[in-house]
Amino acid sequence: GQVDVVIVGSCMTDLVSQVQRLPKVGETIHGHKFFIGFGGKGANQCVQAARMGAKTAMVCKLGNDFFGDKYVQNFKDHGISTDYVEQTAEAVTGAASIIVNDAGENAIVIVAGANLLLGNEEIQRAKPAVSQAKVLVCQLEISPDASLKALHMAKESYVRTIFNPAPAIADLHSDFYKASDVFCCNESEAELLTGQTVATVEDAGKVGVELLGRGCGSVIITLGAQGCVVITAQGSSPKHVPTSKVTAVDTTGAGDSFIGALAFYIAHYPTMPLEEMARRANLVAAVSVQTEGTQSSYPCKKDLPSALF
Ligand code: RIB
Ligand code: NA
Image 1 (cartoon, rainbow, N blue to C red):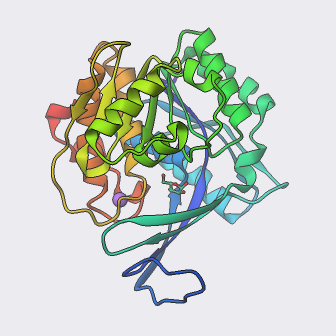
Image 2 (cartoon, rainbow, N blue to C red):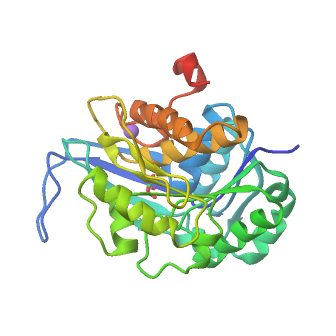
Image 3 (cartoon, rainbow, N blue to C red):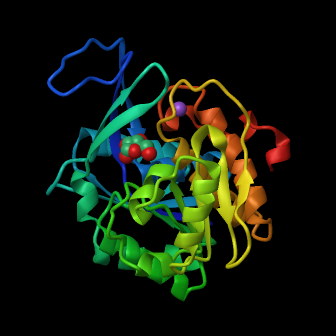
């Protein structure tokens, strides 16, 4: 059947080590816990949208291996359509080595593997789902060409687009901005894209205005504990949207929780002001940082206050 939220993006197996502090170059240190989880920015966003109650489909490429098989089952367990989930023998399922310190901060290395084999043909096959969706979401853990093709396909069918330029590349093609109804990134990604420092809410507003000027419909810069800044129209001033104060255990994937929630709101409440969607998405992401892991920490509709729906 028809789906509301289509994600064209990545899947990774998250290999997570918890340590007191991040190691230095050449150093070996003891960690105190290790676990494996389902991750990857695309899949994370899809799972968060599904847990909030959105009808979702994932367009992605997995390896024809143990982790790939497990991942297909994970999507099915969430009621996510796997019509456009493919497995390949040509590469392994993507993996992310993640180190989380006692402050809940992280450092991540991704080996994208099969994700990079998601190409234009696969995107073309997904056209029935993309063209009938309410919102399409893309990131940068698959080939940028494939992401851009999906964004253009959505725009042609007047489907709203969220683009999350993560992980960021300094020379992002200008077409990405023009194809983004909502361009959503964090402070370090905004720094890489603009070459400007983002240390304060005011800085975030400034770079947000610059990014908006590159042709996006609107811009959101997420700021962790500071919430986010929303810029919706040329000439209007950036709006700071603060979030609730919580104790962070593991902030990995909090940005994906935010974007998954945002996709849900755009699909279900299309006329809600973006600032209000961002305020609510902030609160969903704040739940996720209080528990370890990425998807394993994302709240379901039943765990969230009814005021968020
Ligand atoms: O955004 C968090 C995600 O980034 C993790 O799940 C990891 O897989 C990396 O892709
Ligand atoms: Na978490």
